[in-house]
Amino acid sequence: MAPSTIAIIGGGPSGLVLARLLEVNGITDYVVFERDESSTPGPNQQGGTLDLHESSGQLALKKAGLFDKFSKELARWDAACLCLLDSAGDTIAKFSDVGARPEIDRVQLRRLLLDSIPPEKIRWGHGVQSVEKGSSDENTVGNGCVINFTNGTSASGFRLVVGADGVWSKVRSLISPAKPIYSGKLYIEGRLSHDNPSYSSAHELAGPGNMMVLGDEKMLAVQQLSDGHYRVYFGLVVPEDFYQRESASKIDPNAKAAIIRSLLTSSEELFADWAPEVKAFIQNAEGPFRPWPLFFIPPESLGWERGVAPGVTLMGDAAHASLPFVGEGVNCSMHDAVVLAECLVKHCGGNRAFASVQESSLEAALGEYENDMYIRGQDLIKRSAESGRRLFSNNAGPLLLEMFSGADETASGN
Ligand SMILES: Cc1cc2nc3c(=O)[nH]c(=O)nc-3n(C[C@H](O)[C@H](O)[C@H](O)COP(=O)(O)OP(=O)(O)OC[C@H]3O[C@@H](n4cnc5c(N)ncnc54)[C@H](O)[C@@H]3O)c2cc1C
Figure 1 (spheres, rainbow, N blue to C red):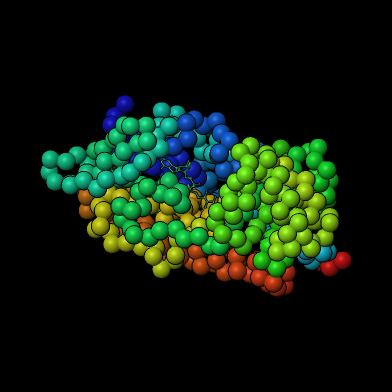
Figure 2: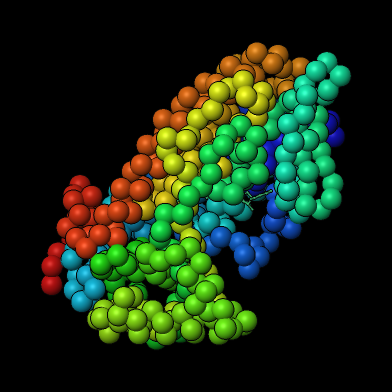
């Protein structure tokens, strides 16, 4: 195998779409370094379902030549429906169609992308510990960066290093002082299996799609996955370490979940005064629970001088982590990969070994990509923060109805 000249750090949606698009364009001297030990979903692998939007996520799959398989075999087109309730359990609105936003399980999306790339291109068990900026004088191969892995090995000699390693990116500090900040909002994730006492209520309300219950500075979301079970999310405005602190007395993850369940349903500041039928989703949610403190990159700190680290860039959450309240994080991340691949082909050429590319061409490609990405990324961070503010306000119902004003409503009120 020829030595790799492009290092993609992170095999999430953005990193894998980029890898696939490089393949499609005949640029094959790349490698993906991924922290996970293997492609088998582990207990810590992000689960849940993602809706792919036409102009971004779906576009990326079209460019990658994977849309047909996605559309015919994996996409859940009927899942683009939403039922909104208030904390008294009354239906505020029911939308049968919130647009052409089919859902796909996160693990299915990863499998689809992985199957489109030669397996030897992914180096599993290569969590990056740090990336050092080296000198790129004439004696240095590539851009001088040295990538140090948690497994004790290191790699260097790359012309291009792409940080696609998510919100806690180890590549980011090379080019930007930006740091993710805690939004004050925490999701706790549980599940409702087929034999769960709340399954039939979830099925009635969320059906193949989603349901949301909104209340003062709190929310509860339920969404169906491809095997029919539901994920349930409790959204809270609490300190970042709420889950760890409140469940610290227990070690067993299920015992921790039991403590949290009881606290959520009994505390008046939390869900105690919500309708019993809504609280049942919390009482019956299966552990182990997973806390998701929600972080974002301040929009004003997205951007860097191109010359700061030649041959290094960021994509996806590594560049513009945002709050998950407009459901576009993955879409924007996949779109980044499309734009980066297009800029690389435009300035550096496709169907060629990357080792011989001129530095000026590479920098022009990265500059053009980044200018496009900054605009989309900043816009997403701002819109998702605003949406979070609305969702957690004490007037969330009407504000959300306004957001979905163009959607196809089948019923409203009780
Ligand atoms: C609770 C929650 C719900 C969400 N729901 C939605 C939704 O419905 N719709 C939507 O569009 N977006 C949603 N998002 C956001 C979405 O998940 C992200 O925007 C998207 O996954 C970003 O893709 P990415 O490839 O940039 O990063 P990631 O998906 O974070 O992937 C990063 C990859 O890099 C690997 N990695 C991390 N660190 C290292 C390291 N040091 N070395 C090597 N590898 C590393 C990880 O294992 C992973 O494979 C949600 C986020 C959260 C937290």
